[in-house]
Length: 407
Figure 1 (cartoon, helix red, strand yellow):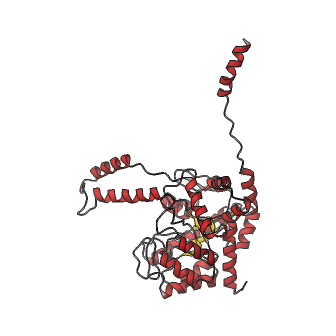
Figure 2 (figure 1 turned 90 degrees about the vertical axis):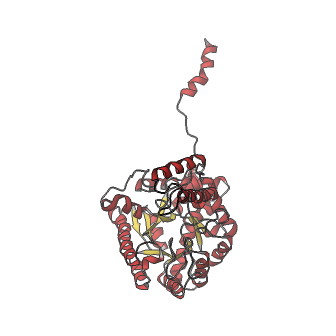
Figure 3 (figure 1 turned 120 degrees about the vertical axis):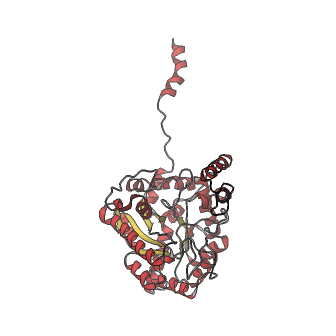
């Protein structure tokens, strides 16, 4: 009987609920995030709420939302250890620019409402000191990022008004080339910045707003780096050496960012993380055009159901490559290799993209990325620079330039 009981022990233990192994990095991450706010450079939650919830967004409970619809809510922000957020106030670059201004004001109002409705959770901030104070008080410091130069409608007066409303950065272009700057994802017209574009950069410096070079062409990046007196940011961009899209930053520009004192905040969008995913996306777009391109092109023109079936068959034969949390860490480490630990940050693009890497599905997942870097040997000091120390330094430098203070 004794032998039978001993033999049964493995079965007994197998039936017991598994105990999760303690996370060896959790205590270190908690210490880092207590001392330094985790500041994400780009989250499109305001626009996602406008698109999906419409007017209900002004009154709906934002504490806990459906994770299938949103990457962000208050409960998950706290679980992710978020201490600061640049909220993107994006509007479509395809709209007339005067309409872009109106919609931008609506989005800015949404960011203000977060702090007004949830004062224990959010605090609207515009400076590094205010960010640190909000973090110390246990609130998420909320900054505003205007994601597209078209949103100023060619007017420095509009830019100044945005600043008075709390805007902390301007992305010089979004997806379209505009009258004064070339976009990375549109045909160039100006070989970078026009003279007015250079004036926009100077005015951003004067106002203490950050110059954001995500979405712009490499020529625009280089022109802006030549003109600016303050460090720049890339609010949500990756290393082009690892994923060859013009939305990412080449090694040549990374070296200039280091010389400028700026920071590249790494994006989680799968198509900017994984080269295989980027190529797959281009191939899929080509197949869509091949099957149905009205009014004259396509193998199944006039037969949308046939085109849909053909695309489904192509997708079954060509499964979508999956981006990984390790690849995001690879981008971070490549930027460090070229520019140094002082010039990298996090700019997730949550609620602004569809496909995300495995393990980074929402704002609650930042600790998983930090743990991955710690597994690779990152020190607490370097993790602190990544999560918020670097962008705080950039903000302080921009404030000094605006105040006319020389180091």
